[in-house]
Image (tube, rainbow, N blue to C red; front, side, top):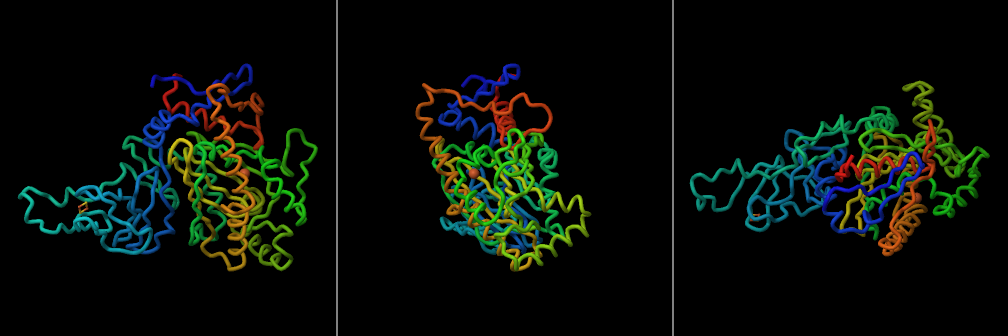
Length: 426
Ligand code: FES
Ligand code: FE
């Protein structure tokens, strides 16, 4: 495929159009595997999932089966879950604690640091056979930022901390919810498939323009519970509070919204009930004492949906959801979502958090089924792409200064970065 641009980005005419072929083409998907998933830092898992030496999780990351584990010394590893003998998956359990992983095919055995430690009938191999050269392979790079572990298949990529750029400030804002700075993944995971291209989930995760129409059921429910949902008269607002779209560098971006929908840390709404008020006030007092009133208000009174390019979303709203998704074909993605909460959180606050994780963000919640429906309708509509080629993404284009969450500024950031990495001529 020759180099070409998939967007029309005309700043003079304030027009931004996206070629719909990028959402339906198998060739483009193959190119994405190499140019996007082969070069970017991709989220693997959170340190809190592996509390003890020997703990492991096996999962797919960017389509690759990997073992995310800790060795006996407690060091973290990301190992390709592929036997060095003839290629079988070595670890077939999803989670557990093991010193050794044994391949069921011929019994080669690996330590939890990836070293090959046992080969049945090793005498049959020639003298030069060196076990130390046959440990499980691993991605070129594996680094963490404050407990969020990422891998990168490109050995020449910049360090993770540089790659994350301004996204680090927003991760810090999430971590500041915990008195000790320790946020943990709460046991359990949500997984679901969506019959839509993976990039539509990136858009949807930050597109606050869709809330009043797609999520009218949820907004009505909120209104009935006593939350004010009418937008103020201010120009361009579609939601009850002002929200911004913020560029964070390297294709990352976030919404940054004044909260109206409640936060377990520490913004009460009527839905939580009167009985919850004292505890939420106490959480607020701790925040203010530790962080000062301004930062405390930033943590509690604003919420954000953060996209770390290309496929990690942290929804820090009525709960904190860590969500990643990966294409399983051009018109299908697999979504995995975990709830994150302060390690020292009390039982009731934890229950409020998990309630929102389930009833708003969950696959059977208020939001996700409607989002999935919308994304699948887009994918179905795109069958006409060759005769109706361009998606219109110019909303808010040309506005100076602050950018609204209900415009498409942040979506354009994603597509510009994607287009550049896909080799579009400058
Ligand atoms: Fe694993 Fe043979 S494929 S031991
Ligand atoms: Fe939505």
